[in-house]
Length: 284
Image 1 (spheres, rainbow, N blue to C red):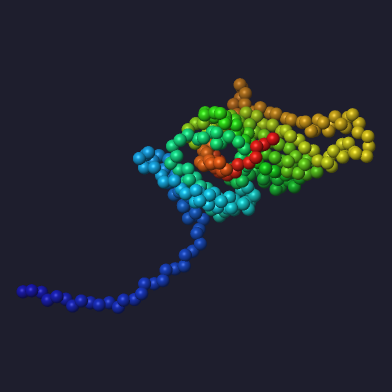
Image 2 (cartoon, helix red, strand yellow; image 1 turned 90 degrees about the vertical axis):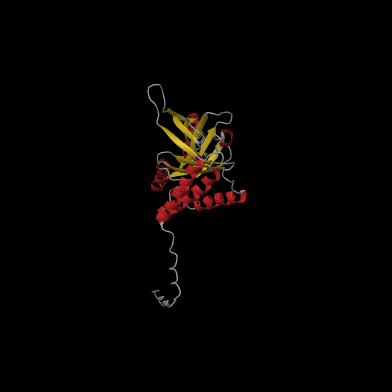
C-alpha cells in the first residue's frame, strides 16, 4: 500500500534582522591584523622562485609610505605615542614592509650608505633620551641620525648614531653639541646586520652667546686666559672606547625590513623596538 504524501507545511517568512552597527576597531584587532601581515611577510620571504610576488604599483607604495609618516607625525618621534597609536603605527609599518616582501637579493649596501634621520622609534634606549629632556627643562634633544658608511662594501661597514643635543643658555639651541656612538656592522644574512659598538664621543661644541659674554665680556678687553677658555670649549672632544682586547662591547642584531631611496625601516631583533628613518642631507 502506498503511503500518502504529507502536506507541505508553509512557514511565514520574515525579513532577516538588521546587522548591528560596526564597532570601532579595538586595540586587540589592530595587533591581530599586524600579526597576520607579519606572518604573510615571513611566508613570502621563504616562497619559491616559481611563485613570484606581484610588484605593488608605485602610486600605492608611495601612498603607504605617506600614511606611515602621517601616522607618526604627532608622536614626538615615538615618545608621546599611546598604545592605540602604537598599534596603528605597527600596522602601517607592516604595510610598508610588505612592499619588499619576497625579495631574494641581499641588502643593497650602496643604497643603505648615507645619512638617515629618525622619525619614530619604540626602542627604550632612545626614548629614555626624550624622557630625560621632558623631566629636565634645561636639556634639549635635537635631531637624531644614523649615518652608514658602506658604499663600496658587500659584507658590512660602519654606522654612527648621531644625537644633537643642547643645554639651555650654555649651548646653542638644539645643535649645541653632538653625541656620537660608532659601531662596526657585519651583514649576517640578506637583511640582518650585527652591530659591534666601538666608541662613544662628544664633539662639535657650540657655546651660546650668553656663555661667551660671561667668559669674555665684549665691553672689556679679552685676556689671554679668557680666549684660551673659549678656544678650549669650542674645540673640546671626548672619546671613550667601549671595545678593546680585554673587553668586548655589547652588540645588537638588527633586521632592516625595508629600504628604498628615501625610507629605511628597521627592527631590533629580540623585541628592542622599531625604527623609522627618512633620507637626510649628509652630515658635516
